[in-house]
Image (cartoon, rainbow, N blue to C red; front, top):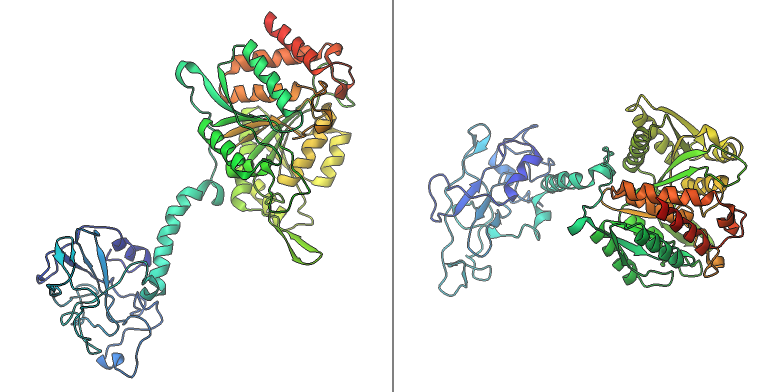
Length: 536
């Protein structure tokens, strides 16, 4: 506290037990907080460094009326009572301390005289203190602390009067607290992996189920049917959210995910005819839960005929910023501005996630997809952060590729890619391209990971409204997403059993739905999967 720094001076604002004044005062609960030692040419702390402490008394004459607190009187007094633990007393303008600086830069204060009690004043904490209305007669300018008590000032209401450097010290203390909360995202520290929720009594898990729109409700019914036949220890808490649902329903779904930690959902349709204030329900869930990593596993499946074979790509997409930040406005009629947000902290966070995923999966290469040749600041920052993170993983090779060249390379030679990391919009495009390479949107699962929560869904987030309730939707992507959820819950045996049954059913062309060139039905594909589960 004796330090002259602004950060050290912010410490007395916390509630600390007061020490008695030197020289003894009339109040046993009053204490003086001495000012810090003068540094940098005698700049005063409350004065913001704008004025120097004058050595002569005439510096505080009537002709030079200061606009802030007197630079020679930064002393503050803390008085304790039973109503509020401490009250802050700031000296009035013109108050001066007695004597020159002593004891290593500190001034000795004159003994403080407690204010006299008034017989008609209200009792505060067992003590009668004089109120502002019944204060002592107005002091002459230039009086000192020994003649009259200082004014009562609230720490919040009169904070502006304490000077610029005092406010900066308080803001710095608040920032130090905030950094502990924002460190993983803002400061770019290495994020922790997504933590699965613990099992409840009997080893069972509760999962939030959001059916969504289009083919989502019927696919979620088949997921529950397969789980029941496989004896998976999972209970579902179903929450209905649709495109026209009010925000209260969305917040109820978010609270259910916070309560359970894990969710599986169908895609929620976004109505483009609604006003701009109506935000995408899918995006609102992702940003509210900070599901920053969207992971898609695109690989060739047995029994599905495609142009390219042996595709095995992990796509890691930043999920919470970029062009999907919902920051757009119409500056003038006919001119719309959409803001793209790229931050160093979140770029490093998604890059760390991609490299950790590559290391855990035994992958050898990570490719960053960008458009830094045009967007030199935004995508340039993302690419720079990826390069900095890549230096911490020397066993994994790193390369970068422009997004338009990436799409061409994907459709011509997709086998060259191993793990890909990219911002939000590019990830949305590349996800759909890769899904088309391996057979379509009905075959690729996806997951959204945050530090505390995880939400699983199909990769392309297609509602399939045109084929809803026609019994022709492909259940493969939804069931594989459910297997990813079981792996996240560390139910690896159940996940492996269901995954093998799904892949085995694809070997039979009679179970293929129309999206992959067959004539099968959704119920027929599910019955084939259940039969393989019975043999397992």
